[in-house]
Length: 378
Image (cartoon, one colour):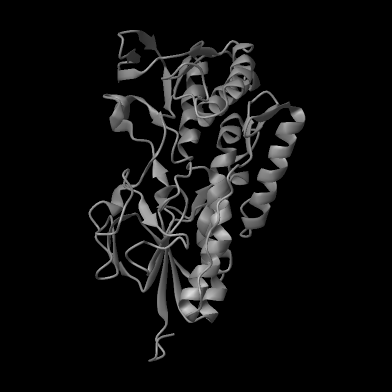
């Protein structure tokens, strides 16, 4: 509390991976003299690591989401449904889309990222962006409808981990419906999974190709419209459903706020996950960049940031020293290939098989069980 006994206003923006641990322990902030508020676009937050499996129904939607509203409210906090569109650090306020302003004394932002559809002319009216993860339910429904009229052409634009997993799981969806789909995975580079070791891409490509999934290398989409994706070299590829996994970029709310940002507009933070020029602003996940450390925007870092963020927010309320986040140099990645197998990657070491998917399923479901504390699966 302040010296006058007034509770400090601690606001969380977004209920993603980095904030889950803090929201689950919201009562600790109350005991430390804070009034806790969570702002989010919906009461549920979906776990991206199980999104492709949700599309194919390895998992039901209720297995893949957290009830963040109930999580925070049952621990003495409040939930505000809305989208933050701007941040005023000088006056310590957040502006919501509907015009409401939320004041704060301490704020933490975990607002994720988005697929920049404007990079491809015509994409916004034609394609389905892979984020937010709830979009995969729309993609599933679109594909199911197309099955009724024959063999749909499904185009995935972007051949990183998300594109590879979705290609495999759309194949699985077709099999589950006794249907067929012409699935094409378009890569702007030579081969797939370009940011991983070359042999990882080869193994994944072999798995997809053996199931009849077409791989288009060096296909950089220049425009989309009327069911056609045209490459910059003039090649046309038809589609009935197009899903874009062309990479992600941080949300735009920091750009005009006065906080320091990275080149791509992410909130620039120090090793304590604290804004480099406003010590009452914290953040984690896809929307930040740690000064001096260029980390890939993957879920494993967000999960590892969570306990550090919890500790440091409590330390700020109590006037204690902060703890530095020390990212690991190498991390584990397991892809769900959609055929019951997984592709486990750690550096240049890979392992493909059913046990790899079993291990991924164990890690994912264990993570879900830790934070599904509000009856989501009932």
